[in-house]
Length: 452
Image 1 (cartoon, rainbow, N blue to C red):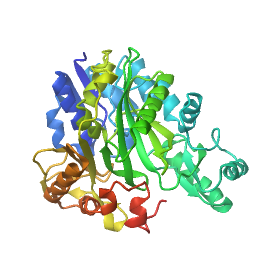
Image 2: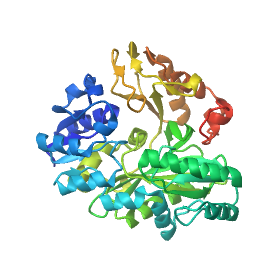
Image 3: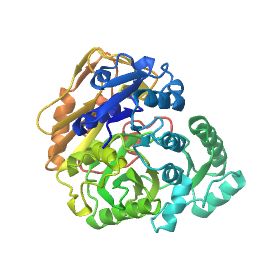
C-alpha cells in the first residue's frame, strides 16, 4: 500500500480523498491555489503545497507545477479527483513516466474511452447499443447534412473530447445544423483544445442512466449497478439517485453487462462510469464513458456499502477488488442533491462570495459531503459546487421524505444556492412518481433557460 498520496484537486473531492487516505493509514498531501489558501480542509491534510495563482490554468491545470509538488513531497501516487486533469491522458502518462502512480486508468485506456467518437466505435464493436449517428468525426458540413438526413432530424452535435454539456448543440433542420456545427466546434476548441465533433440522433425526452464499474489489474471487472441522473439543466446534473425508479430488472442487467463488456474491451483498470440514454420503451443507448470517479459516486456507495475512493486507491496499489460481482447488492434507496452557489431565478448565474451562515442537516439517513463552512469565501474561479446532500433509506418514498426534511434544515446565507429549486422539485408530483427526463426542468420550470 502507498505511504503518501498527493491530491491534484480542490474542494469537497479533495477532502473526500483526504478522508479515504486517513482510513487507509496513508499520508495525504493537498495542493492549493492562492484562491484556496484559506480553505478549511487543508488543515486535515498531512501537508499542503501552494501551486500557483487562482486561475486554474496556472494551478490545478498546470501539470509541471503539480508534478514538482509531488516530487517535493516525495509521494508515490496522485489522485486526480474529478474535473481539472482527471481525464487528461497526457497527465496520466507523465505521472507514470515520473514513477508516480496515477490513481486512475492507463493513458491508453483513457484515450480510447475519453474520446467519445472512439468510445462509440468500441461500443459498436462489442455489441453495446449506441444512438444512431455518424461513423466518426464530422469535419465537413455537407457530410453532416447527409448524415442528418439519413438518421433524421432532430440531431445532436457533440464534441468528441467533450463533457459537461460543452460543445453540444441541437439542430432541427439544415440551416440550424450549419450554425450548430460552427458553435459546437468553437466551444469544443475553447474548452478542450479539440474542435472535433460528431453527430447523433437526438433521443427526445430520454432518461439519463449511468452504470458504475470498478476494475482491478487482476482481470476482475464488476458493476455497482446504476444511477439515474435525468434531472439536470443545460446537461449539468442536479439530482442523482439509485436505483433508477421503475427500471425493469432485465433492462438493468443488460445495461450493466454492456458496461462491463465495454470496460473489458478497453483493458480498463480503476473506477469508470458508462452513461446511457433510456427511451420511453426502455431501449438504452451508450453515449460516453467517464474515466474517473464521478461527483455523484456517494449515491452508489450508500446503496452498495462500497467505498469507491478507497477501492480506487487499493486498485492503483496493485491490490485486487475487495469484493466480487456476487457480493454487490442494491440495498435501499439513495438520492443526492447538488447544492451549488448559483441563482436559479437568474439563469443559474454563479454566486461566489462569503458564506455567512452554514448549518447542515443531520439525523438518520443523512450525509453531507462539503468543504464549506461559515465564513468560507467561495472563489469565482472554479465550479460552484458547495455541498452534496445525500439521503439513504429503505425505500425511495422514505428517502424523498428525508430529503425534504434535510433541505428544509439546510441553511446557507450570504450567497445564492440551488436549495430553493431542490425544495420545489422534491414536492413535485411528477418527480415523486419518477416521471422525469433530461428535459424536465426546462419544460416545467425554466422554459426560457438558454443553452438547449
